[in-house]
Image (cartoon, rainbow over all chains, first blue to last red; front, top):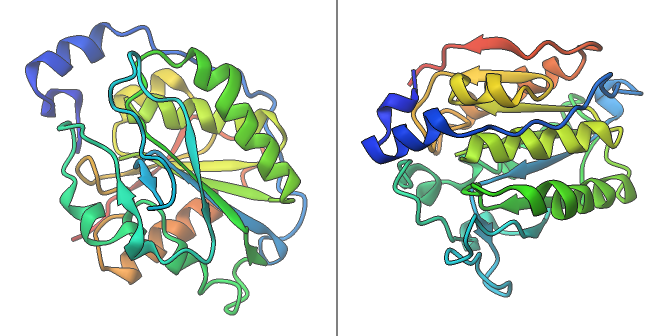
Amino acid sequence: MAKITDLKFGYQVFMKAYPYRKVDWHPGARLEKPLSEARVAVVTTAAFFRRDQPPFDTTIRGGDYSYRVIQADTDLSTLEIAHRSDAFDIRGITSDKNLALPLDRLKSLPEQGVIGSVAPRHFSFMGSIAAPGRLIAQTAPKVAQILLEDRVDAVLLTPV
Amino acid sequence: MCHQSVGLIQSIIEKAGIPTSSVTLLREVTERVAPPRTLFVDRPFGYPLGAPNNASLQTVIIMALLTLLKERVPPAVRWNLKAAG
């Protein structure tokens, strides 16, 4: 089991003392249709970006709170990874982007009748955001708005 | 800090009206951020869908996340998936 104590000592001190933020989401949303009719999107914090997009900026104090849109028809093997965090093993997502952004897996589910469709747009953030004020106030609400515009019924999220 | 970021983004999307479920590799942090519907995957940092180039394991985890979405009143950390391999 992954634990804070798996991290380097400096990270451990930081993460145990850190005042974690929360956003009150209650009472919670409902899936309004059967899963077999639902349009599903993925949001990951693996810092994937396309070669025609600017990379995430690892020099921003408090973390880069921006996001990149990954279209459903993107060839995952062409995505770059901006993460420079040594808090996780990057070899897995380097070898197979589906490990964090499982679009190839999702695309097999509509024909099996498990979900209705795969959303046209998916989203990548770089998760190392120690100062999440602008993530909470600006970019996460913007992504939620785009998901609503795309009439997405359900969202799956993955950290690294 | 990836787990705080995921929990916050998830909470904001849920609040906007779309049901969400997420993987956590680190319960200690996810329990403090307390997003809706999380699936604990017992794998190291960097391996949220279990293992690279393992379509069947990745699909098992996706199916568990999709199953969680049907929970109408989501508890904080609901599932504990012992992912093999």
